[in-house]
Every structure is written in structure tokens, then in C-alpha cells.
Length: 117
Image (cartoon, rainbow, N blue to C red; front, side):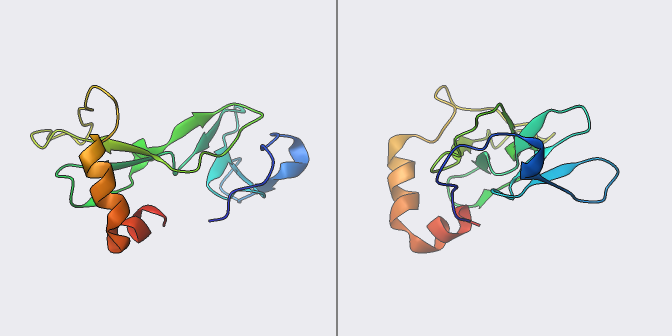
């Protein structure tokens, strides 16, 4: 998905009604949504792994958005504890992968393309 050249404003003309009873989707960056209550979030804010090999997005990938919003170049990479059974996960102390794992992902084109979905 292409990143907008300028920050998202959150103005009314920047949204499309998606027909689910009140949620809106941003016209300029389709991964950003706004609820009926006015709160906005980016559904591609985080990607997760349990083992450093397989990466995925889930409902926890959402990050809250405040306007003006500059879309980040990359999502936050989060390592979850393998023993977690409820899916909530435990982040490492930095909230992202250790540096050697990031390099491994960036150097592997198949994983990199998965992260960019």
C-alpha cells in the first residue's frame, strides 16, 4: 500500500462510509478506520511472531491514530511469548524484535513481502 505524501488530517471529506453501521475508512490510506465515537486506528500498525519465522497480523495489530497522522514507513515488529495461550502475547522489553531478527526478516524477500501485505 502506498503511503500518503502528506499527513492524514481526519477531516470529514477524507472518509468513506463502509456500510457497517457507522465505521468509516480513510480515502487516502485504506488501513485507517474511524469508529462512530470518533476514535481512529491503523489496522496495520503491528505485526507479530511467536518464533521469529512466521509473521502475522491480528486484531491486536491495531494502533490508535491521532490527527494529523503521519503513516509510519514500517509497522512495529512484536515478538510474542510462545507459551501464551490466550493470544494476548508478551512483548520483549523493546516492544519489537531484537536487531538480528529484523536483519533476518529484511534480508529474506519472502518474509519481507508478507510484512508488506
